[in-house]
Length: 332
Length: 151
Image (tube, rainbow over the protein chains, first blue to last red):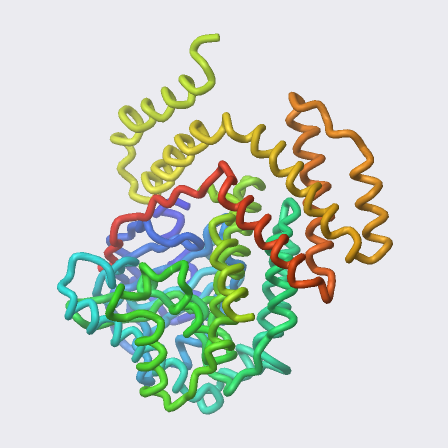
């Protein structure tokens, strides 16, 4: 989509959302390179309405034509609205085009928070003490997300309260996605899935789960996390789901610092911050699930590429098979 | 036959890198282009290994199915027998090789989910899967974008 069409769509969206809006001006509209499943456009907006004059630094997140994840903008909008005023650092959300009526694809407009995004910040060039401080800050953010009272904040109706074990629900959801996108037999994924079905753990609590918790979708300024982004896969579920994602061995370079901030240290710090006892077998199950879910996301990308709807080339995720099988063996 | 397939693919990568990429100013398009070039290089390197991998995989899968056969439900065992009775296809026909491989792997996908398999059968399944994963010639090539700034 061109910048001109984005600007036109934004203008229509603002007029639809704020009928009294006039003198609507967007400047500096530009698309950034990041985002596997969405187009990200940054811009400054000004307008006047019945409440007065407004100027904001904003970001448009628009679903890409081919995407790794089928998500709902409304879910992200609801979560961000619900988290306003909480201890979770997240951007304020402004407008939503849930069906792409104005922007041609489901879209969300949110506050453009200062800071930069670095997938590998925990293993980058910063001094160890800074990286450790950021690692602890990320864990504190995860704990804050889990501490958010989703009932008081009204997230039950929009996210859906799990009716049954979150692990079984997660398997149902991701198996459906797996069956939808698989183009060829994958005995390895079926084998791991059967193991997960046999050993699915029960949840100790129901909490808000981010669903893709990683440094790559947070903004950092100096030693502070200024915003947690990408809430499109947020849901209510098991506290160990996000913890399993960040202790997942295949993504340790993103989440861990060798010798200083590894699985044992993360679990110990998490238990201290939350008072929860972490069942190691259950956490391993969520580690395996994280790998399996990642494999399904890659198969989604393969399917979308083959279908001509996605412009990056992915391959069958064979690199994930060995770690999953090894974790299963250790858990036996 | 010159330029060979490999020479043409590598030459295409060179032209894309040296002529096209420098002229692509839009960051998102450049990221996409970098991914495509990296993948094309991977495919160029992996392509010669694909037929051999398919033959190895079909033979190994067939062997594992025979190992598992006696522990499987009779209906599934019967379908495996029917497939294994068919002679291996012409090794030069890649489409038939791929179809045969898909058929064998579909049967394996069912077989490995059979309940109450003995530990030694699970061992055989896992050994096969790890051996196969280490031989897959096509690999995702990460071309991580540089740290992204969202000012």
